[in-house]
Image 1 (cartoon, helix red, strand yellow):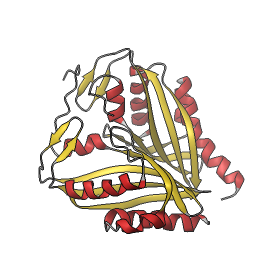
Image 2: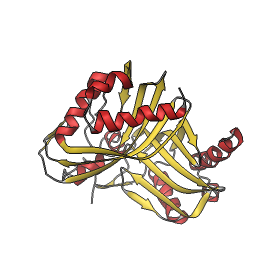
Image 3: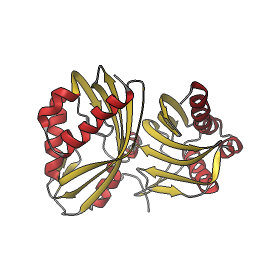
Image 4: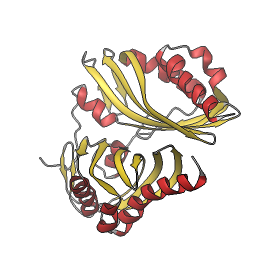
Length: 147
Length: 148
C-alpha cells in the first residue's frame, strides 16, 4: 500500500469519527455504502444499511450528547483500517442496554474500543465495533466495578 | 522484523500458546516486561499472569479454541479480530461472583492489538465481548437501575 493509498483509506474511516464528534450526520452518511454492514459487539446490535447504522449511532449520541471519540492508534493494510478509539461522554440521556433501558445517570464514561473498517472505493462497506460495554456499565454505576 | 514475521509470531500466540496450551513457548513470544490489558476486570499484567490465564480459561471453557477472523499489521503493530469458542464446563470465579458450569457452548468475539519489539510481543490490548459470553452461559446481568 502506498502512502497515498493509506491516506485515502484511513481518511475515509476517520471521517466517521470526526462526523460523530460534531454530530454532522450528512458527513457521516456520505462515506457509508448504502448496504454497509455494522456489527457492535457488547450490545449485539447490527445494522445492514446506511440508514440503520446512522440510527444506531444517533441513539448513542442521544444517550451521551457530548460524546466524542479520540483515535489513539491506526493500523491499515490493504482495504482494512483499524482504529483504537477512546470514547468519552456524559450519560445525560436514557441508554438502551442488553439488560433494559438505563435512565440518564449524569455519569461520565471513558472506554476503549476498536473499530474495524472495510473500505471499498470511496465508501465504508463493513464496520465491526468492539466496545467494552462491561466497563462502560460499571462506570455508569449499573454493575459493580472490579479491580 | 518484517510485517509477515510479526504476523507469524502472533499466529503462534493463538495456535501454540492459547489453543495448544504450550506454555513453554511464552519465552519465544513475549519480552520479559510484556504487559496486557483487557478492560473489565480481567487484566493479565505479565507473562506469568498470561500463562495462568491460559490454564484458567481452558478450565472454564473446555476445548477453548481461538479462530483468527482477520489480521492486519503495520510497522511493529499487529491487530487481530478473533472468535473464541469453548464449552462452559468449569466454574467461572470472578469478582462479581462465581458462575457455575453450565455446559453450554459459547462463541465470544474479540480483538487484540499486539505491539512487538525485535520480534517479540511487548504489549497487548484486548477488547473482549464478556457481556455476550455471560449471556450465553445464562448469567443474569443485574443492573442497579435498568428498567425493562
